[in-house]
Length: 253
Length: 76
Image 1: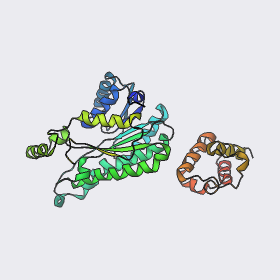
Image 2: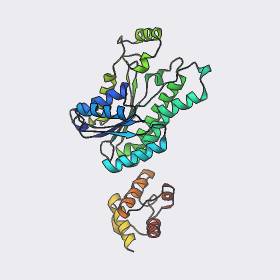
Image 3: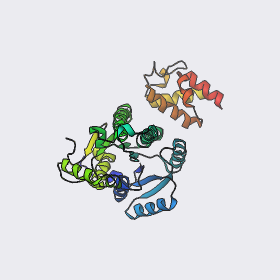
Image 4: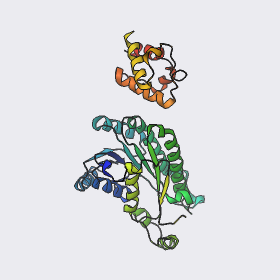
């Protein structure tokens, strides 16, 4: 069948970490395709409402906000269950929430490792595993894990971050194998240097060096990542699972 | 007996095995070739049909039609 994204219409898709950066661009892109966009927020009701209205104005068939912190696993489960009970099953998931605690390996504190792994890796695993039961009642289940090109190539001062993102790739492949019999698909996206607050916080000199290393010559945009994510969530990618796809301008070839 | 008949009917529909070939002692894994994921789905169906909750750690003990029937009998 020729690809279009019409099956995203009314599809219930949960995105973690949608308040800014890549997550926000994905939420916007899905809203434009008339999806039912669901995002989590930690506590700022006003900000959540603002995002809700924004996504609604872009054309989302429905927008829902669920209150939970991705590292508060009990609250996450309770609030997700209550949501599913009221609104029906979620069929798409984008595990996007992420942090970085960059530091030279010899200076990394154990608690920084813990926090990075909890937010970037464990939360995605706990959330996806927990959603499995209700996925069995959904159609066209597709999960996208936001990994990173750093998870593939490694990077100085990013041992925590790289380990968490590489972990997501192992999880993606295992989950894809385990649940392919139920037609659940699971893929990982590896952004390279994308213009976000996270990359802006890198030292300028480092940024210049990175640009030199990118064959396509510049940073990517959050839309570049959103386009691929949308493709992986839709039936246009129905024969793709357990795949790891870079959006990096050729940085890691 | 009524519960057992209903259990057999649900299992028969899910597995496409004729109900006449499913007995009280029929084992889900050995006789019906269900895998662990199939078992989770089967127990979810039981939960829905009978309006009960089957605790995750309990499902390991439910190996036969009889086990399920007994569990449902005692949980009501």
